[in-house]
Image (cartoon, rainbow, N blue to C red):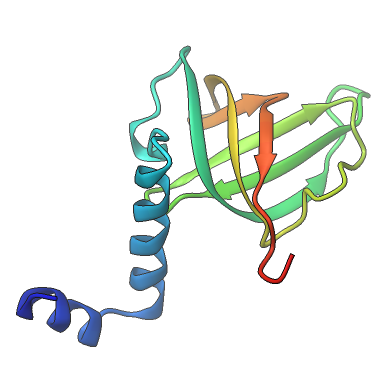
Length: 121
């Protein structure tokens, strides 16, 4: 480890260290960073689910999750679903789908996903 890296780790906040770890993991898996998501293109993202909520959209059930990858967040929305086993806050996974900007936020509707095992699984 270089002196520069050692100093960064010594003085970085916990949030900065976690963001750095998330970016590294996403890069290792070959995923697009949230900060670089292109509008109206398919993309794969990887990160940790920060929140999961049930929020009806125009009378249709919709499960919404916020995924954080160290560079930003993307909203994941499953229409017609009230819950999905394993889609819980704190769970890590990879998600793929068409990215669109909704109210200025990157959003993927009905993404394909692969959940990563929890520690100890």
